Length: 410
View 1 (tube, rainbow, N blue to C red):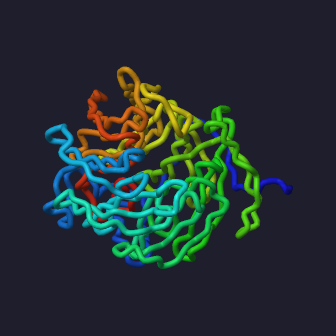
View 2: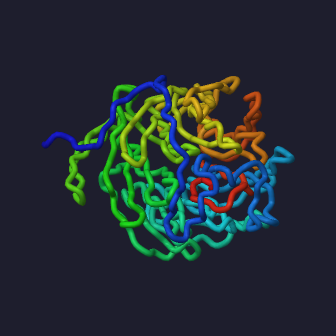
View 3: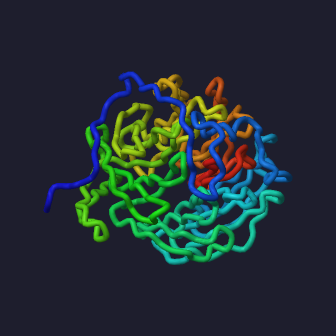
């Protein structure tokens, strides 16, 4: 087999000086809301900066319980469960729609063919009728709001669908991205980076040309030798691009862009930290160690910090009371400025920040709880939920529109 042609950059700690950049104007794709502050694309999701579109929405935390097959509803003001309803098979994430009017539960029905999405009315916290959708592990929205992007993980495919009816518009195969699952978008909306969990890399998608630009492997020297429960990804050739795709030991998970839109932060569950990737040039430029099983990434309300949920395990199926924690990265210095352990251990996974920024809500994947971290002190409390809670949504969220996942707001 020919040598692998993954686009690759050297791994480096982030002790080197961070380059200064001149202020810039951002020309966005048609239909995308303008970037108000090019140095802080999170400026419009500041504390309690709600869109009129969320008026009347109940303040709730929606927790998809993957194994229980339901959604647990929490009133965060009361710190108690106030509802629970069934969805489809294997609910993975609760995803706010681009227009902020609907919450979608994505039920990917692992190893089955009856995947679906379930709409939730945020004004009543009640579900509507589920819509059959093939293999919906996760869901995002194009920056112009014209398409929902259903991440068909098992099928290694992105399905672009009508954001309201879920009717299929077109599909994009990503055969070089085994385990495609999480994404974030460039500051101008022209491309997206998707993580490839079982290939140890990232796929770059040109949203204007509707094509795969290429694949980037992350440095293996940072990854732990322990594999995902014995899983060994095989080398193969991407049938569409012809690029040889290499086996890899990393397991990239969530990905978020820096406030200035110049760098993507990529959590890696085996590397126990966060890779830095220049999205435009598509090269790896650094690595920040955080904690065991780095998994979920969430910016603070003021856009100055990044909360990293370290799930505490290198495996997809973990044990209770693991080495879970939260690390806090300062965007300006690219350094960890705080670490919040969970007393007695835990498994923080996915979630989001409260509207006022005071709390970070995360599912406890292997402990069947939801955690609430105080973002000043790191103090944590928990609430029991169903079995294997995953991508919870805190709603409403500040911001003008949602790019999907558990509330990637801009």
